[in-house]
Length: 169
Image 1 (cartoon, rainbow, N blue to C red):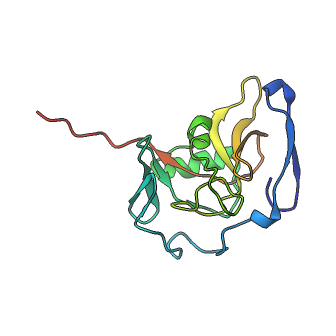
Image 2: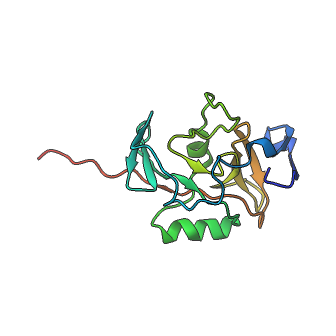
């Protein structure tokens, strides 16, 4: 599901059937190799509120998402460590699936606003696949839930819990 056209088979025993391929036509946003600080971002996007330069709050869930998908690939362990170092975590599969947008014009199902970078990638999830040493991932070239084998590098996306709401005395 990444460059190079490699293929993944999703086991039928997981309730998902199919063969998925990464589409080179949807590899990266129009500005590859930008760092998160180089890429301009609108102050607000439908359903999201900007938080600083590189995060946005999902107004439906309250989750604070990192908005720039790094072009480097990380294993699940490396991605977990990267998120923890930022005071965040890898998202669950349900959280990532909740980001899918059918209104895409470029074939990527991760919304272009507020997200930037490798938006059509397979994103690592924190959720383990029961009975295996694999973890779930979501490919945004179609928005499918896939199994990511242990040690298989993919793109990471970190999330933070909602900020606590102030209560009136």
